[in-house]
Image (cartoon, rainbow, N blue to C red):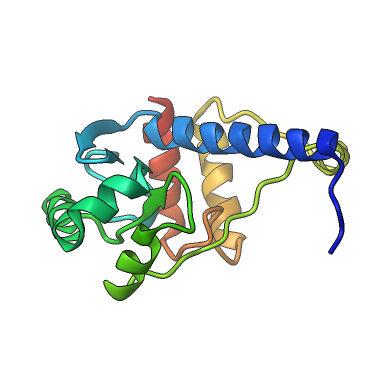
Length: 171
């Protein structure tokens, strides 16, 4: 086992917290946000059938564990009512009783990748961020996503749906 210096550990923790907060802000951009027991549902009206448009997040695992199967049933019922095509639940922490409860209900954990620090800075030098400002830019963005093998969130959805989600988030 390799020991991680305290300064590196603090940076990793801060970078992880910043990445999580960035995701949370992104999920809520242009979305309706509804508080549920132990968390929130953020969804984009009219787009909820697309996997990237609905998320259950800010979920406190202890609330899930206490409510048990009823929490899952209630949350899934609300997602169905919204027309969600996929149930995405982001727990605030892992390694809790909620993990096993969700596994028994058929959920699978998924690791997500975030880039921070020097590697991200180096990558930024090798690419350019181009703002989407007019209809031609949106058309180029659509073409880009049509040519890409998968969506940025790693889920399967039509390129036009992904672009519609992005438009809704900045509206």
